[in-house]
Length: 222
Image (tube, rainbow, N blue to C red; front, side):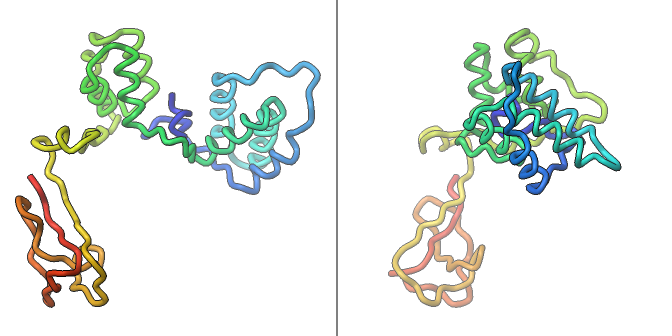
């Protein structure tokens, strides 16, 4: 579950891989030898190997990390090697984020998305939340409690897929750009700001009020 979003360990887990591009390049160059009786590469094997990589430290740790990565590369196909590299550097770039995974877990387990979000807020561990939801269902998620020395994960917003879903639940910041403006007044981010669109609570205009026909309109909508 964590690997899908480009993570190896939960958010508040102090372990890190400490693998740079030089080490990864060495593994790619040295790990393409073919083994006669190679076991299939599974998610479990990948994760256990990543744990061993994170555990390696001190003198000779780079050699150990390179060797472990070479072992994975030697058992992986071209497409799998690409995924391994993305996992190591935490950049999956497949358009799947944590919010989408939470909704997928809720749908697969047949529980409310809010319960899944609450469990993640209390544990900070997407994998643990998925296991609890699928194995124990709604009751298991409701039983999740705060634990000592586990920080609460802030949940500041929920996903909305259209304007109707967002209105009434969120306060939105809106910016509307209109026409070229070579010298706009300074606003947030160095942009010109004019009075907001109708129905929004705006910010006061800058020192040099922008022309009505050009600039950036900004404000907050209820």
